[in-house]
Length: 289
Image 1 (cartoon, rainbow, N blue to C red):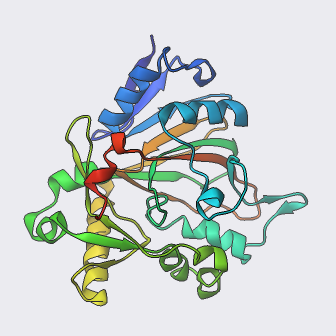
Image 2: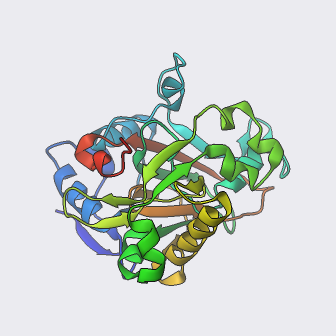
């Protein structure tokens, strides 16, 4: 059996003495899944996940997220590369691809703009720069529990609208105007996600959030910004400095995350798989009927 240690005083666990390539539905997965539900973020240091084992691990949690298929394209699932590497070096610091990576440095939740939100992200490091490039996590479960009533009350029954191009516009209008940033219709979700296994509530919000139903755009954006600012105070944030092979899994229902800058003349390459929520993961608690 594996051992654990705290990732952060308020959330997360570091899992020791596990080779994720060996995990199956019967062997260790039930224990790992319980830790995921209870603690929202799991770190497995020094793993050796290739794309095959990465995919097999993700399938244990939920259906694989295939954005191309959701967009109506006949494309098979593939593991996403979060990288500035090219065949001849790295992308230019001002290239749209690099700017899109920089948009991930806004506090966000993956896939809030999709027809089905993400349950989790499983991220592993392949190439790390000499400095920077951390991934930071912020617990919207811990923050929601602490949030003062003046901020919490208008969010309790709120419906928040999400748009991918909204976050990209904040980095570059040219980036936000790309067709792939505008292919998804605006998506509404309720602001509070209740975990069905333990009843814990978390604020469901993102840099893609652009409006709150029933409020003016400026008023809604102000409340969104204030809520994200509260949730990302230092006491709710864990910053992970990557080593090659590290695997970080977090609950998209209860965590915000962002990347940090690094010297863009150096390669940084991570592999990512998101899985889509099912009704068993509490989808109905945020779905707007």
